[in-house]
Image (cartoon, rainbow, N blue to C red; front, top):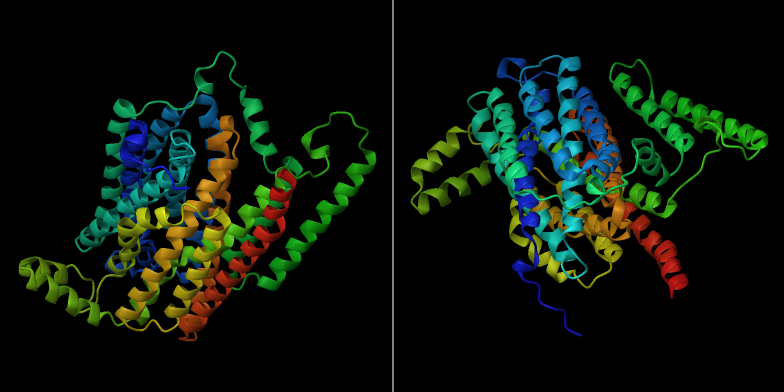
Length: 514
């Protein structure tokens, strides 16, 4: 049976308004984030912060972890109080936050400004993706999320180009540009955006307490969250102090194990004394909520841990180990051939080092490939199950990291990035689509907020691994190939886990349903 053809008119105006705001928000984020590794570790004399690789890993991992953790709360609040109000509030936070990033130069102050960016972005993310989910249906969902992901990468493509140009003048212009892109969104949210959620306008909206209770109930109760939050806190704090040998990874593992044992013993005691009467949350036994969804998030965190190396690690690898003169020559020759010789000269002058292309321009090929091929890829995988598509997407990332093992010239790195992009085009949109489909209609933004937990964990693990592995293998041993081999192995483990989840958990559920 042939599939009904999807037309652009099948998508309402709010769909396109949301996508437009996503473009500008991504221009702001990737304009900064694509060059963040270079800025954070760059020499102070050249306008950078001069931090170590380990500190850079902690900053990127911890802050972006919270960026993708907060949407659980902001998504729940958006369902209750309205998407439009949450979007407006997000922009109020983001404009000054991006500007302050360029003003603060110490670790504590830069961390504070970075956290403000994380808060604002966390207010934005679940609302936009929740909007896409609400204004699409079974017919348009797959294509709609494919279009959305293409729009994400239009912003992700333009932002770093602008950042690469203006940082050649002064690093501060990178942050001014990001603040400016966000400011444009005030126009779209106040004039063109139409509220797609209904609870905020209903006669009996949930109380704030009920909103927070529903938020926790998706994955478990307060006791379960306390256990997980404690383990993550130990990891975060411990990783910061490993760089100066204040603590070792062995000691971090021991402390984590002790925290786990304390919670298990406490749980056994609580279960014995529990008499069925309602008690405070800390006197309740630990309980899991939608454990299948939680397991899905945990597995996908492996994909995002690998994914983030494109932005965390690859810029430094290109700066320190890749000869990009081959790409530089072909780029300037091509521009001159089509009559853009003056632009070719300006392009050459914008490079930080003579004969070497800025890392952010090379990495930008990832976004460029997605712009051109995302709709086609989404169309080709429309009939595939989400987990089949995700599995093959992760397999393709294994190939890309295997290519990076040999990444000493510009051509090889470009090949690795382009291969990676096709894996991303398959895995990322389908994982969002899956989350949107299983979410209850009145809690779409909340579930989308939880989806970002896998991205949060991927950023936390990815940032810490990037700092530790780059410092140990690339910087100290001069063996970046070993580092990329480890990331390829991690992607392989993720692919195997996703396949097992599909065969054991999903098929069992489908069998019971039928």
